[in-house]
Image (cartoon, rainbow, N blue to C red; front, side):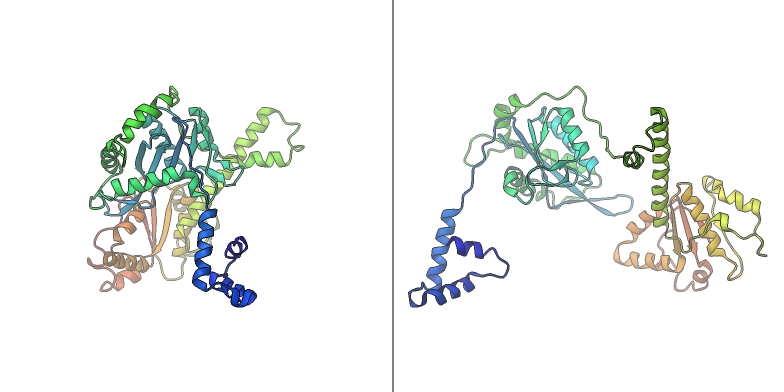
Amino acid sequence: WFQIHTELKRKGVTIQLLWEEYVATHGTAAYQYSRFCDLYRQWRQQQKRSMRQQHLAGDKLFIDYCGPTIGVVDGATGEIRSAQIFVAVLGASNYTYAEATWSQGLPDWISSHVRTFEFFGGVTQLLVPDNLKSAVSKADRYAPEVNTTYAELARHYGTTVLPTRPRKPKDKAKVEVAVQVVERWILARLRHHTFFCLSELNTAIRQLLQEMNARPLQRQKVSRWDLFETLDRPALRPLPSTPYEYAQWKKATALSLQWEQPTTYADLSFEERIGMLIERETLERENRRLTRLLQRAKLRVPASIEEIDYRHPRGLERPKMAALASCDWIARHQNLLVTGPTGCGKTWIACALGNQACRRGISVRYFRLPRLLEQLRIGHGDGSYPRLMAQLAKCEILILDDCRRSMDDSSRWVNRSAVPGPLPRKARKIWK
């Protein structure tokens, strides 16, 4: 039976196939298929072994997120944003904490831990999280690499992080059950409610959480709160005098370069090496930010102010272009209109000004106005209009190309049903 059990782990191998091979070997002495399956199932049930975990008071805190989310409506735009549900449970008492956050990212992950410790009034000896990126930088069965910021949090509170093994949900069975209870006791009861901010949602969660922890456990006359007061609270470690302040750890690119070339910088003093590190790292970060802004801008042509040809007879003046390149007109909340005959380079100049704004750290977005108006018209029909307008409002400069073509075809593009509201006032516009 062990051989059959091993063969069933192979891809494509079925118990029907193994029975046919068994019959071919034993002939008339072989069991019938139903008997064969019954005997195998009996053997498998006898082989199954599960070790019951014993949880000591104040020993472990299990942490995870719920699968379902709760929608939070933006009162200004009507956009629905999903909130993640963070769950933490103590091993001995099953005393549970839950809250809503915007993401499972590192800042929300760390902040949820700080509020969890404050809720319990102490810290356990071990933190047992799942292998999400905010907790574990590199998952491994024997030597997982804990996120640096998460490790600093554990060091600040005098505890230790012990991640579960990958693909071993029984390692955190306690929080798996707690997540299921939160989904049934809290999330299911809030499914018909509408929330307009995260604090309002967390207030509702906290009320139901208190009821859940005070509710007697099945087949027992005590609640999670009673067990917490009896078992876990006396055994928890005290909180430090100050809560942990979030800090994200990253290795500077310039430092890596100095490590790769140790002999090149060996003769420099400490102050000189630090100065070079700061200068190089500042330049690296500025370049990454510029690359990110240019990618988001989606400029039609890769133009720059320095490449403008003033010899071409199109009326461009150096002083005026220099004034526009300073981006002072953006600070004064002014718009810019670029006009001229077809083929004189209006799009190129608009993109050059957009490129200059990106180099000054200003967010830019390029649109052909016919395409933008079409997106707004479609968004007004399928409900994505508020989200699109919210994205436009985040841009400091909108470059709107081919305006004349849109205005000429007013029956199709410019009408109140297609554009139910004006473009965001926050963004400065370059009309071409």
